[in-house]
Image 1 (tube, rainbow, N blue to C red):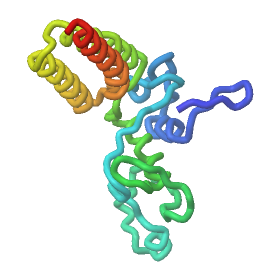
Image 2: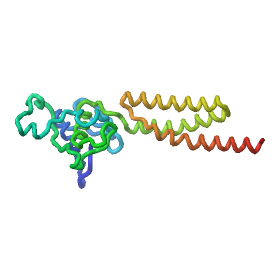
Image 3: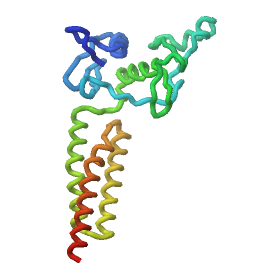
Image 4: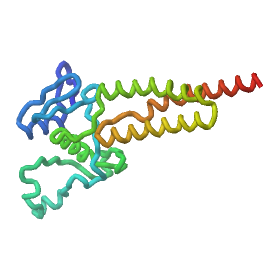
Length: 208
């Protein structure tokens, strides 16, 4: 949302448009922006995570041919923000998203503007990252502890249950517009669990 231009900090296109729409300058804090009476939590560097609404065309698009031919209904765009841009795949202004591998950049910009005005974006800020770090520290301890507690099918079932619970927590948070990292805690937990299991197996064979 913000970028450096020489010795100045400038607002991005999306933020400028949203500020013009509400008729006020955004308030900038270390981990959020305030605009139109809303507090919009941002990631490190005032990055705004986007939650795309769907594939291309989900945000209403009117072709230039329709407008130039006088076929566009003025009521469709009256009192609305209109972002003009190219949607042809060959222009190169496309971005891969979960819904569309070639979403036009103009729709990406429109999504950011909509998030700023409605506050319906996903949250991933420093507090969410701290939660990720906490899960990454606790989950390995829990898994190794369960393996040490029961070195049989019960222990493995308990480990599997903890992993399932973690994924349920992750999906529940996402459904409430909070973006927790699923990969980081798993990446931190799996190697210690595998090493512990291998060490237990090696010790068991030596004692046999």
